[in-house]
Image (cartoon, rainbow, N blue to C red; front, side, top):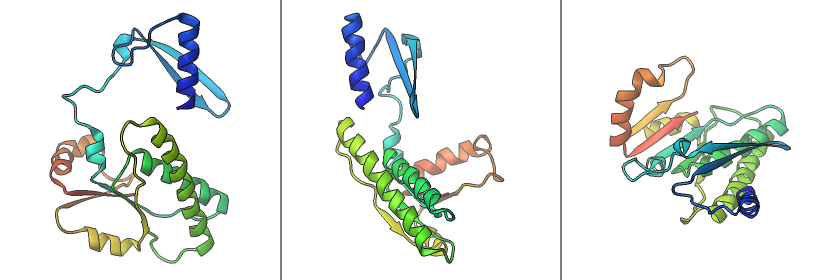
Length: 191
């Protein structure tokens, strides 16, 4: 958000260009990776603005519960992964994030993972609160044993999706998935 504001003001000052976020003549793309900034100027035809006939993905994500197994091992890695997951859950504004250990886990590793989730969620919340035109709410986060989550979520028109690199590709299931996503009252994704 800060980069958008500073860069937008600088471009406007240097070029005296008008800012048109709906139908721009040129689009400035900026990607920041660590200490490097990469800038690209695109043409209007490349601009993809949300049009009224497209589905708003936010409505779909409001039905999504993420069930995430915690990371374990080196405490710094646990915390880093937790931060990324906390940030992502809020970025997509999902319905709920459930941390679901499959069995016994080291308490300190779990603690670092959960602290990371809290840090990630808070940092993303501050960005969204300032940048989004709608009211931003924190995603509820809970800890629940994996097998109990499966038992609880298996009924009442809930769609359970289990991510597995050995499973079918999206292309193989896209038609059925589209139908199931529309009719499900809750979409539970196990990661």
